[in-house]
Amino acid sequence: MRKVESLNTNAGELLLKEMTVQEIQAMIKNADSHEGEFDLVGSLISDKFTLSELAYMVEGSPDFGALTQTDLDALEEQLTKLNPRFFALKDRVRNMVAVDRETSLGGN
Image 1 (cartoon, rainbow, N blue to C red):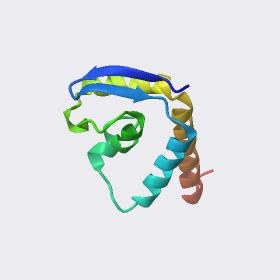
Image 2: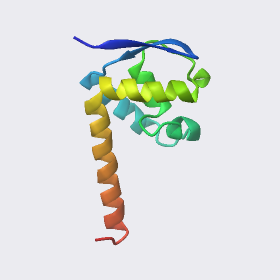
Image 3: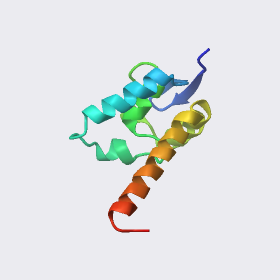
Image 4: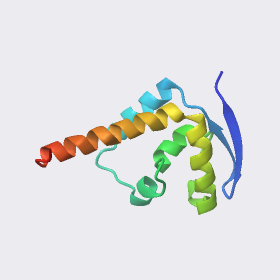
């Protein structure tokens, strides 16, 4: 059964959810389809997730623009606990990209 946790934020009460494999696959597919678009703030606001990814991990369509830094810290903590495999997958992909980049640049 999917875990869901509540978090009170400046954007209101958010229902944070444990992601399914299907949701992770859809999120990755959706990211590939938006390659030409780039939201600097949305992509870099958190070390753990982008705002696009966050949309998959919460119920409804909250106003992410109202989130504070304190809210983002709490979201990082709770979502990491709810979705450890997603974040581990993301770390593995980052490592693969870093190795590929190093290899293509002539590194050892």
